[in-house]
Image 1 (tube, rainbow, N blue to C red):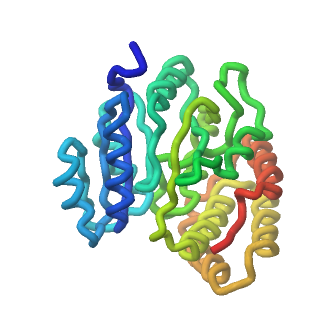
Image 2 (cartoon, one colour):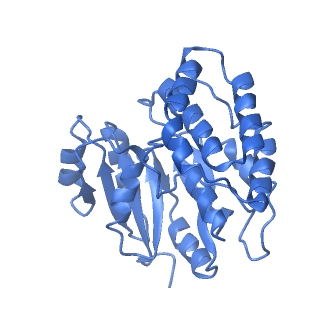
Image 3 (tube, rainbow, N blue to C red):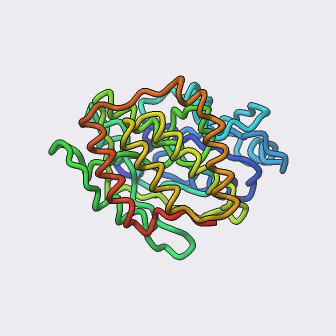
Length: 290
């Protein structure tokens, strides 16, 4: 198998909402990949003509239209239509480097207990590395020697999301539950994904969701004392403004369902989560801004 031949091991899943121009750019990039992956798009009830444009310009793409905004759970809907061994996730403002999907499939083929790979992230149009890449390279977690790179505690743009989280840091819960079942997550330096952030992104709304979901994950999976410490740290360090107050109010409103589903992790996994928390406190990529 050469680097220019198609590779049928991976399906690319994209979710979108009211970002037609960005999505069409991403689909054009994916169409040019040498792997020629099947692409599935979940259009989360866009009102800007997104679905019509995809159907017209990219007839080879499988287009799903749930007619309501499922948030990150739109990926769950798409995965039900996947028939390949592997899934590669994209947002509508990201795309994979040519050859990375083939390399990722090779790495996963050779490592049956590896659940997910995170690629090096390049920010466009400047071509600079995302600040989170340094955090990935310097992960404090230790894993088995067969991992292709540093062990991780979460991943970027994952799938299988809890519908209650909707969007914003939604991959953390799934990543935790995968590790609990004995799976490993890793960073792979020789995989690359490009990210050109949409100008339509509402950074304040995303901050509200991010803080809320961090609290919910903490309350769902961390043991009592670490959960209380993490909650206290967030209360002291997030910006003191209306957006943060809204995030805490929304999180508190969700306490009934969170407590019903609360299932703290065992000590070994809690040690990993605590190590990640300590490392992230000094990471320039972990700031609640917007």
